[in-house]
Image (cartoon, rainbow, N blue to C red; front, side):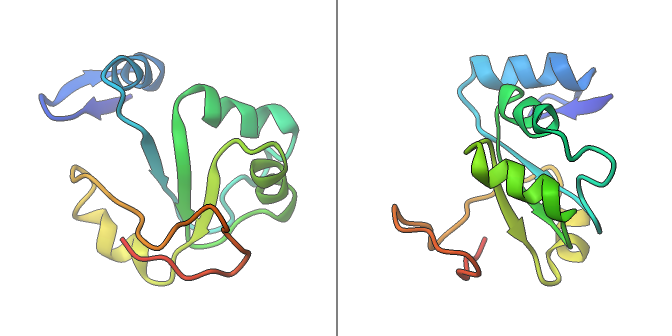
Length: 112
């Protein structure tokens, strides 16, 4: 379950994702350590894309899952430095990833 913003309705993740897609709002996942552990198959990466997730910001990623996110052009994996601690109290806000261009390179710095 999740809270749909801005009205605060409590919905299943799938139903909230559909509402965000209908409103044309791209989604960002904020995660902890080893995001994707236990879900390194390609459908795990495709699932986030089908839900409308454009980026996953995590403290660290499971290696194969991160490769699948990139290789299948599903969602952008962003490894945050101290982002998760700062974002925890700001989960209801909108995020912009700044510094992204058409020439994204591994280990490129971005800000939010």
